[in-house]
Image 1 (tube, rainbow, N blue to C red):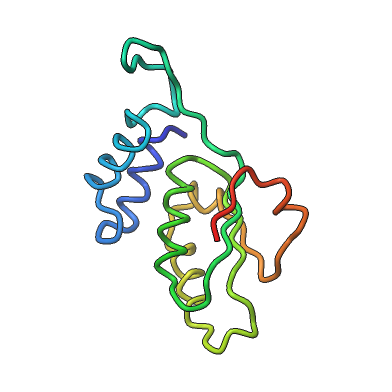
Image 2: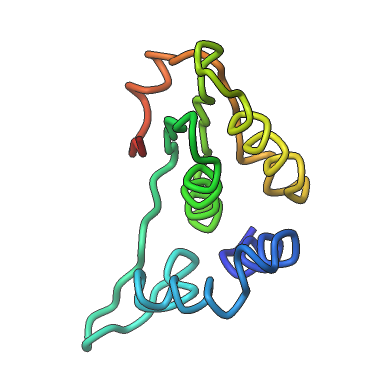
Length: 134
């Protein structure tokens, strides 16, 4: 799946949270071009291509689901496999965990396939991750 395809799926699923125009602007600002992950392009006279992390391990806060949504959306745009360590059972309020899971359920199937959730920290996955967002 291309970056534009992932972007369109995310923007259609959550148009208010992630408007298509803003996602396009973000990719251009961060990668130089929307399709930078999908092929070579010339930037400042040099052929370049962006590389995304294969696995991103997200450690989600127990008090603010929107930070997990944003982190996950960025990982989905990159096409990475996203491991979400959900807020623990000891958190006073499990609202954030429910909201994160509801967000994931609301994703189109091709994007949901890029997400894995865990309630406990998985040391093996954490060590294999190319990037960690906490």
